[in-house]
Structures are given as C-alpha cells and as structure tokens.
Length: 91
Image 1 (cartoon, rainbow, N blue to C red):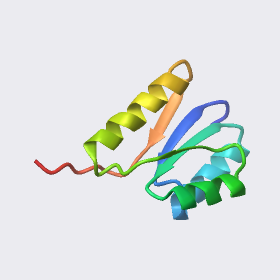
Image 2: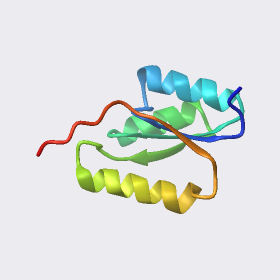
Image 3: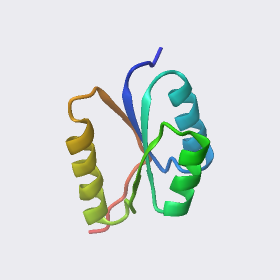
C-alpha cells in the first residue's frame, strides 16, 4: 500500500490526475501537483487542502527546471514517487 510517500503528479489539477491526487492523499501520502493553470491549481487545493501545488508549463524547458528545483529544495529528503505523461521535447 502506498502510504507516507511524497508523490508528484504532473497535470494533477483536473481529470484523472486530480482523482489520483485525491485518492493518494486519502491514503496518507503527501501529494504534489503541477499544472499550467493557477486557477485550476487553487481549485484543486480547495478540494484537497493538503495538496502542494506548483504552476508551470512542462512544454517549456525552463519550467521543467524550475519544477525540478522546487521538488529538490522542498522535498529532497523525502521518498518521492513521480507519475508523468511522456514528455516530448522539440529539437
């Protein structure tokens, strides 16, 4: 059973990601979500008060780096699990 972990869910402010965040939070995990819409992230936090949120667009490399830095600075000492869609980068 997943309990006591720190879990990052990208695209977690709505849909399947939000439902997964809710379920994992109820199971006793610290859940971090990120998404592009500050409004959706705030609505998700209202729905699940224990959520930690980060606003970013993972299609932008600088936002990916900022997310990584935030997780490392805030949660590096925690066991962290990550569920993410495949990220495609243009070259």
